[in-house]
Image (cartoon, rainbow, N blue to C red; front, top):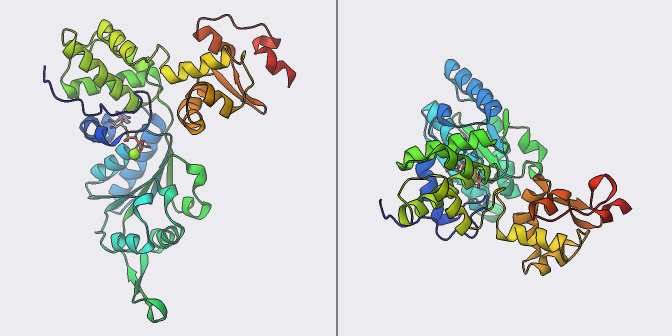
Length: 353
Ligand SMILES: Nc1ncnc2c1ncn2[C@@H]1O[C@H](COP(=O)(O)OP(=O)(O)OP(=O)(O)O)[C@@H](O)[C@H]1O
Ligand SMILES: [Mg+2]
């Protein structure tokens, strides 16, 4: 028993796919460092390994790469792995951190040959920086502006070959000219239960805790296809096992810890269930407007839309219809209720479209 403080106790919701700042250290310790330690995402891993091997064989910096996919699936991890596999330094920045084109010019002009430049949230780059990046990526050149106002002149500066790695949760927001400058685009998708099981076993080994298979199954099936959530639930189960249990992460510890944190068998948390209950109960399955639904559960519309809905829709509990949100039969079943009869088993109100 280590008695160490919980690094991410401030997490707003244990099932949020996004990381909160205090949790970053805990995450860093669990990040796979090499491609062969990276679990799942077989397609992206194969493609990436080809790109990297080919570049190494040619002794040249590989093409620019874009990694896209929902939060917590391993984009930052892969960017770090790319640099590690190439044995080159990694420079990290992000769209929101670059306020002016000059900030980007400063970074670009200080890059060393072969360096990997990781730009997180690349869809949030300001337009002038974005334009500077196109040129740098294509021609390995940056125009440095010297002086101010009418006397300002721009001096072209040649850059050493480097590899830009962009990450985005919103590939659709990326302007086509920027997207086209990436020679490789990897799309990360949600993980399967077996892959998440591997993730938690690997993390347990890193944390030096004993995790048995039934507990790993329990944690992975409640992790919403997301390694970040799987690792977070694992840490919560570890807390429970160390404070109230035997120290061993077994099925009882997993079930109890996840009960305390109100994460159910399908990975739904308290708010997810409140939304479904309101939908099935008060609104008889809907359709009901998003804002009405949000008021009914005492939350902001945006919270319901961005934190709750995507997973409920993906799991087939909730339907987005032109007239509002509606419950799918699985919602009733999950809440232990009888789904109302309707055409082809859908909610009765939906039959009216
Ligand atoms: N394939 C994987 N194998 C093992 N662990 C993983 C894998 N992918 C992600 N993780 C774990 O999940 C955590 C979150 O991953 P990461 O920070 O790379 O996600 P991200 O896609 O960059 O998320 P965001 O969009 O929020 O930046 C990491 O700390 C890492 O430990
Ligand atoms: Mg990231």
